[in-house]
Image (cartoon, rainbow, N blue to C red):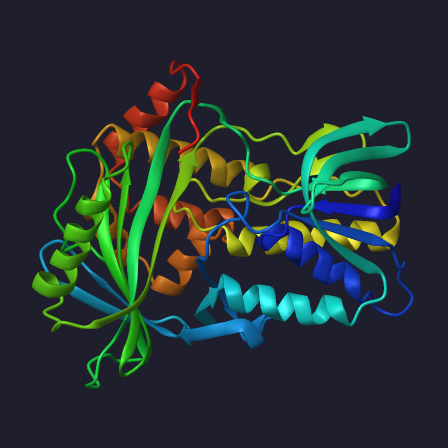
Length: 396
């Protein structure tokens, strides 16, 4: 049986980040033995993906950042353009392959982290720790015991919520033989896309050079589209809205993120915790996850290295979750849509709005944003939350 102080199940953004922070503790802090259990190549591993977030100055993972921007542009449905400089923040893009390679290099230099490819089948809390049962890539049984276990695997089904929407998207990394992109400015939200009957849609463009960019189409709505519909929507945005010529498609990405006001369980046994998206790190109103994961994981790592109980904190404050629940209800009911977001970007400084979307603003800043929202639709949506039942939602 394998033994460790800490076992991490799942090697996505949350699992890798925690292993990274424990792999080289500062002088004077505890040095813990860590077991990182990653699923073998196959359907249990997440597909390649792109994470975007904003932070001031340099960050821990800057060596894996594909590109970053301080100028962001938003287009309203009517075609009005707003470009803002977001200093001291930078909007950063990391591709999962680059992030994984950066962490892997660090873990290879560590003598206290052991990485194993195995499928974890069960985690059982016991006195003073937990047991993990699984199978290795070659079918051999895996038995491990740890004082603390952190499980970042996707949930089999979402917890029951009053409102659940899906953020689903399809994007292309494209290349041109001519310099047609402005790498100094990212198109954050472009609402000139046809809007769905329920929810909203937008496109965005993240240029990494004058000839290379990620162009993506996104919807917030209750239902997914067919692959043909995603291709048609993205082609329309690229060709008819942006007016771009035929471009070479280097790679594609498609994904879906649940946006829900459901409460997430962060502790399943005295020594077993969930982390990352499985613990509610995804911001319900935006789908952004990476920055919240880092805040949550830093708190967990600091507790472990200090010998304290490492129960993960809520990734978002109660105030933020309440505002998100109201916004989701207003969006799901059709009371707000693309014009609501355009209005926010027009009337609120973009740097402050990004901090608001990240849950990093104080009360008076939240109120300053709130007065820019349509008051009556929001009050009606808030009142409805008192009576809406919580219903389970199938995993998308």
